[in-house]
Amino acid sequence: MNSERSLYPRMVISLLALLGLLVSGYLALTRFFPRVSLVCLVGSGCDIVQRSPWSTIPPGGGIPISVIGIVGYVFLLGWSLLALQTDHMGNLVLPFWFLLITSVGLVFSIYLFLVQRFMIQAFCTWCVISGILMIGIWVAALLDWRDWQRITQHSTSPSMEATQRAG
Amino acid sequence: MSTQAQRGRKVDTRNAKTLRVFYMVLTVIAVVGVALLITYLVRNQGATPSGGAATGTTAQISSLKAPTGMTPEGFYYKGDPEAPVRVIEYSDYQCPACAQFQTVLADQIDLEYVETGKIQFVFHDFPLSMHQHAVIAAEAARAAGSQGQFWQMNKLLFARQGEWASSLNPQQLFVRYAEELGLDRNQFEQALQNGTYRDQVRAAEQAAIQAGIGGTPTFIVEGRQVNAGQLVAAIESALAAKGR
Image (cartoon, rainbow over all chains, first blue to last red; front, side, top):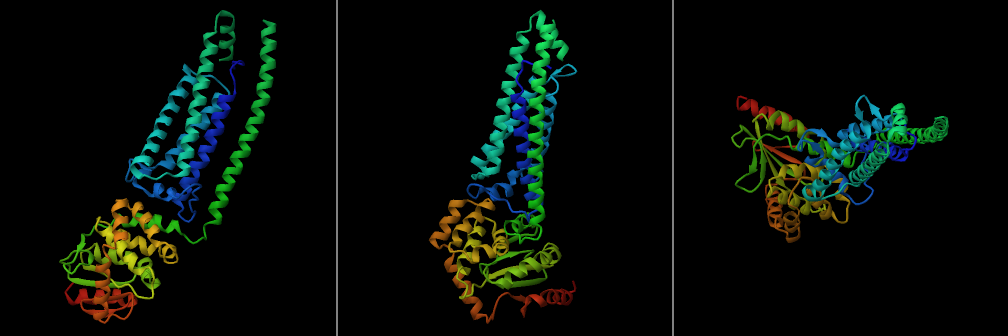
């Protein structure tokens, strides 16, 4: 492992992904077990958002977004934990692909925000929290990738051996 | 070379320790989080569904396939207008027995008789004077009806009766219900504030009194007055009489 690269971005990502997983899990729980009431932290938009046709992909009857969230966060959590152990999977450069994938996640979160703002016209606190977590994950992924870039670009002959050995 | 390896090993040890602590913290958070979710799930299994009931209700509402509309007398119906048997319900949104009919029997009636084209089911508002919010609730249902969602709001009002019947500001709750159903909020709110449908509801109330209806829910099956307990039998015999 390249010991100059900071662990913190990856640790932050796995922490945020875990929190995102718990939030998505809670939303999924209240959807599939209606007896568990959805406690809205701020305001009253949670019920409206959760029960609107926009709460699935595709809208109006599809996969609940909370389920997509669970799958996504499990994936991010698994990946970030893996990335704490290694930098390469075969030819795949993990930091780069991770940034790419979290960018997709970020775009999805932006879509959800826009839906709440313009289509449902109500906000669910938990969805907003999930969006904030996603932003945090993306920023951390960006920092991690830039860190990686910085390190690998400084790779002239001597430390290139170290990088190769660590990979 | 040895310096590098030495330096690498020292940093690796520090990293390894940080990672170990981090994994421990992460595991604790994960365990606590999952434990909370499970506790919440288990503890709420016996709880009275408040917002919960409506999740199922809203899901059922949108699946009504039978035609709906308004009779010439100005009452909302569901089911084929040409159906052999006509059922009229005189109902008060704030009456507990009426809500009970909704929870216990209404869906079954929908499934077996309305959706199959066997009956046309007509809703006659009959707000009783003892129920403070009955009239405004009936207005809310009609306001939703003007936006094509009468039966959805009708069902929602009965499902959430516990919530709004005892509220000091039921109108506010009705607006939220309207939002849940995806109605135009402003249009709905205006209708309630202006009392657009009050006259219709009052007229319905008068018509029910004049028809000699004693209480709610009361059902008229092909001219014969029955209560909720006798409803299914009455429908069956009416259908049999018509050869269905």
